[in-house]
Image 1 (cartoon, rainbow, N blue to C red):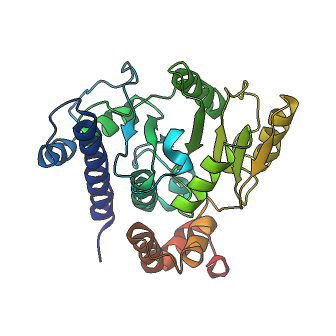
Image 2: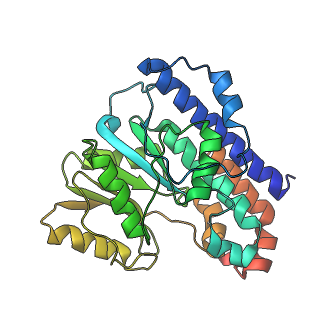
Length: 302
């Protein structure tokens, strides 16, 4: 059985390999720089340097997945991942289950990074704060594809990143986070396809929030919405309709905020054989008793 620290290192190693691969392919195909994948992996695996700066870095260019083998609606849709480093993520879980939350966050990283790798269009990584950005830079070995979040709450942060990307002439943008292992390429491509027909698309979560939000025009001011509540999906939909936008919603997905959510994921991913999802499911199975003891969950959630 792997220890918690080994699981975290595994997640960080997966991130290093995935992002380095994406950057290498992008640079090589675009002819921007001479880029060797072994060099990229070695650079990405380096630990963060003490005092490494991050918060003042300007967004550069997206990571481009030039390995697409088919034409999809994703080609002109930019996918933006809002993130925290695993050791900073899942604070609500950490309050209940301590260091296990960091391991869970690292495994969730594995899941979403596979989604980013599978994406057929441009993608961006948007870290929440300077420490998260420094950690991410250490994994990428550079700033390609990074656009920092700025703002007091999640709504302001989304508005900030949205404005910066649209200033570059980007029209179709989809935002996702790291806490929905039920995402897959089909779900993301459905969202992208809907932006050909609708002004906005939402991916509702079972708790009333959203796991995805996309639009082909700039989002209005979002700071006053009920973030992290069961009213968020409805409030986002209302804002869109008030603008006169056409809007559609995808199928409901679960996100992970609580111990019960985490336990339920084992069942929801029961038939998902993607490697990262299998690893998450197996880890939850091994840790079920401890998660219930520490977090007060129930086997009924499985």
